[in-house]
Image (cartoon, rainbow, N blue to C red; front, side, top):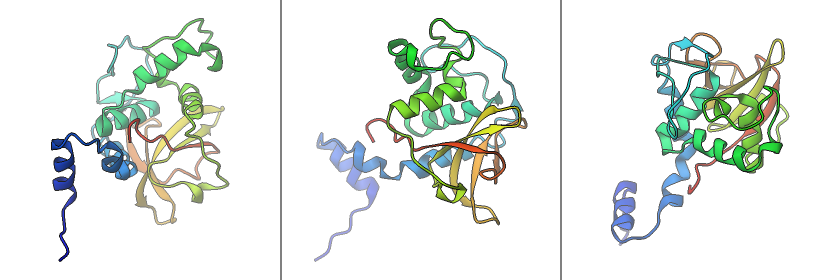
Length: 201
């Protein structure tokens, strides 16, 4: 006789028995990350790069505003409770020399460090999340793509599982009009591909 147990029942049963199930439960983390990013569309409607003093940990600017990095930070918080503000700050505090000095900082700044694309690129590389790629076709749902806009301005997007008419995956990003779901993997030069599984997943 074959017994079919749905996912919710299995996860609940394992948890009740005290058996760790995070790794099993998080196999679908790319879809969850993409969904959390898409949930920001229509909610974050303003691009605002202003420096703001934030609470720590878990600090955020008002949800109706932000920049491209805020899309990523919020997606990880909403989907998994993973706080990139705290993780990046702790890694920068312990390894400050490994991070860019573009902004003339002499020490970490937990208000802004996680909101800068080059810092996220460095953090993800240090965590072994960088992947090789040759073209936009290599990017998969759950990936983070970093690009350079005109003027060599860093940008980051979350790749979703929805496809554009071009065949490429649509991405969630904020490049000036709030969070948008758009076909942008071929819009600007790609410089990084990262696949950062939530810690414990």
